[in-house]
Image (spheres, rainbow, N blue to C red):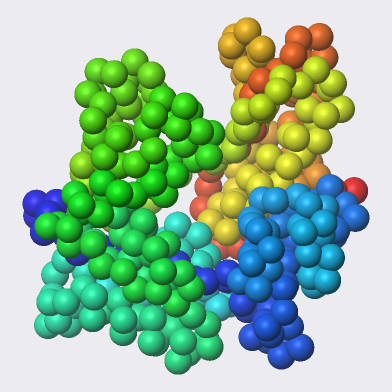
Length: 362
């Protein structure tokens, strides 16, 4: 089927963990709720309610910064992952009522391919509205939905009117929609890349489209072709029912080079916690760890370690990552980028730490 004939729905639950907690505990409703590390720890925000987001709080922010912005927020430091998994299974069963072509991205997010009339309904927008209604009817939770002819546009659309939104981007609307869209809102353009683009005068999709392919490749390397297609509304990735992830990682480029090893270790802990949380959300685990370092002179190295069995807890993951960091020259050479990833991925019925993860450091 030609790409422009695809009908893709992206469903994204609204503040999922926090919303489940507010649903289950009426005393939390209407209040700023943060699921994550304690405010007096070096933990991070996993999810926060929309009441908390009004204070500029967001996922992956340090818990201390979240507390500084909203001292009266309610911090939930013992996430109920068993309940989150239960609700996620309910939601996926609703998806299966519509189509078998489902690509889960995490506990609270998925793509659905409804290109064929299901069941005898040709409107993907109608199906998205039906799914949102069924989710609320069954769970009491809201979801945002995006509908378009490819995955990246459907994901952009689902973010457009959060919470409880439904946005449709049709093929004939894509060019004008993307032209005025800030590059930071494009799928796959993170804060660091958006900042680099801004320095080059690339602020919107129209700015990005004005760059020829060769120039994008010269500046952004292997990401150049992706950006070239993205701003033109081209995404040829199908919905993959059996999606196999090879690795999962996070990295951060610092505004100023870091020279103190203890500061690097704390940054690595933040990154490792973020990775571990994503492993749990995707119900996967791994056996191999890689630490990536880019020194101040742009020289880049990696250090890896493999284990005979899948890693079972965050503490072991962080300890192994820090050991790898200490095996480098980071204590003698300033560092501009740190990254950590886990590979040798396997799908698990239940992640080994799904019930006991603590999003704070000891």
